[in-house]
Amino acid sequence: MGNPKAFLTIPRQEAGYRPIHDRIADFGEVEQTLNTGERKLQASRCMDCGVPFCHWACPLGNRSPEFQDALFRGKWKEAYEILTLTNDFPEFTGRICPALCEKSCVLKLSLNAPVTIRENEAAIIESAFREGYVQPQSYPRNGMKVAVVGSGPAGLAAANQLNRKGYEVTVFEKQEYIGGLLRFGIPNFKLHKPIIDRRLQIMEAEGVAFKTNVDIDLNHLPDGFDAYCVCVGTPQARDLAVPGRDLKGIHFAMEFLAQQNRVLAGQTFAEKDRISARGKHVLVIGGGDTGSDCIGTSHRQGAIDVIQIEIMPKPPVGDNPNTPWPQWPVVLRTSSSHEEGCVRRWNLSSTRFLGKNGRVCGVEVEEVEWLPAKPGERPQMHLTGRKEIIKADLVLLAMGFLKPELPTFPEHVFVAGDAVTGPSLVVRCIDSGRKVAQKIDDYLRGKQ
Image (cartoon, rainbow, N blue to C red):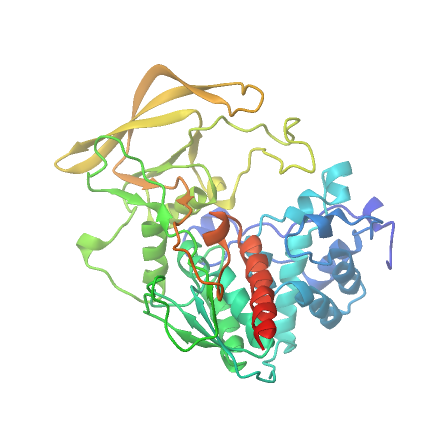
């Protein structure tokens, strides 16, 4: 490393977010950037540990110490080349990954000030596009064809890797745009959609074919392919089957988020079909990232106020002795959307929806208590009987997704991403797509 003691004198510096009053007026990306000099200083904080836990924690096995060193030395192209050895789409993970690497950084474990690995990753790939390092490449063809069903992060990663291995790849997407979760599930203020389009243009120039508005029957896959990669994600959201669920104004989070992304893409909807938080009291049920995205979108649409409730207990702030490293730290996380204004409450179970003239006007909730888990068992939820009504005329269900039930496939059909694991992280889906692409390559080569 150029400066192995930099971490002693250079504090962690995050780029931060645009001012709240500015960012809630549009759907532009909220995260800011550091200048080149500041970014190189942040990269210098990497200590090139003897055992780089960041590398171990990353599902993709990104070589963080190596690209940090190149970045510190001003070798931006070298940093880009190192980064893309393991990551097909650092422009996605550099924006929306929860940075498992940083949670395992030695500076996190010792000082609670890890290297800004995710931000540095985003800076490297943006520099690469800006400087023209990212250019379409040509790959010799082997005469075999592979179909990829689904164009989310797993499907795109599989398609990218298979194309580079010489296969003629066709990606089928049932929606009108390519991108899956990246396109429809993540708000523009976290991932601006031209970032996706920019990558798709590269992939198309390299030979990947994309077909939209094609809903594939998984029991009858299209003919003409030597192998198939099924990457359909987890399309079924978890529902809340309580009285009043059929009232108007209650929507799955993905209905809400996907429609807003379509509006930003130029589509129009009839007033009766438009899901809008403008002038409404919004209740978000579910405390994860999807719920957070609903909060930020509601603010930008003009909600009067937003409340987010979660059935689980409030996590501790800063440190949780019950989830020590190398476990994922279960601690309170405050997103940019939470900072924009939101009442957050925990230990609440929704018991029924209340309506007026066929439309939701409130939700009855009951406080719950969690009893400690017995050995080998999960914690037990106990209803306390303490109930109240939360006023709401727009309710968004953000309680996660169900793993799909897939048919039994023949040996030349492979499955990747959330369709295998259930709902997971974009970085894990990219890793899964890469690994399944290698399995398909091994299988087809073995058939020759």
